[in-house]
Image (cartoon, rainbow, N blue to C red; front, side, top):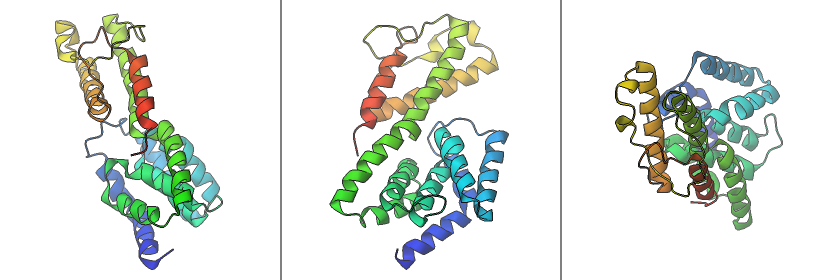
Length: 233
C-alpha cells in the first residue's frame, strides 16, 4: 500500500465523526438517526480503538451497514484492507469502499478510486460481483425500498390502501392529494413527506414513474430496484 493511501486511510479513521455528520446533510432521505444508533456507532468505534476487531467488525457489518451507515461500510473495507478482524482481501475491501462512496463523499471516493486502479482486470471482475452482492443488501436503494414499505404500511392503516397488488403498473405517489383533512396530523404528515422524498430518490435513479397512492405497486418497485442494482455502473 503506498504512503499516500495509508495516510488517507488513517486520517479518515480519525475524523469519522465529521464524515458521519456530513452524511446526514446530503440528499439521501436516510433512515432517521436515533440515540440508539449513535450509541451503537460509539460502541463499535470504541471496540475498534481497543483492538477488539472481531466484535467491532460484527457491529459494523450486522448492525450499522444494514441501515446505510456509510462510515461503517467504509470501516469494513478498511478492516479487509488491513486485515483487522478478518483475513486481508483487497478485492473485498474495494467492494466495500465502492459502497461507502455511493453518496459521493469525496474522501471515500478518493480511497475507492486509488484502490480500483490497483486491481488487475481479473480482480476488477471479482470486485464487481462482490459489490453487486453487498449493494443489493446494504446499498442506499435497497435500504430505501425497505423503508418505503415500512412507511407505506403505517399509512395504509389510515387510508386502507392495499399493498403489493398484481397490477403491472409502477406509479409515483402524489401524497398531498390523498386524504385531505385526514392527513392533518403532524405524525402522518412527516411520514408522508419522508415517503415522498424516498420515492423521489428512487424515481431519480431508476426511472420508476409514480402517480397515485392507490395504484402504487411496491412489489414492482422492489423488482425494478433489484434489477437496477444488478448493473455495475
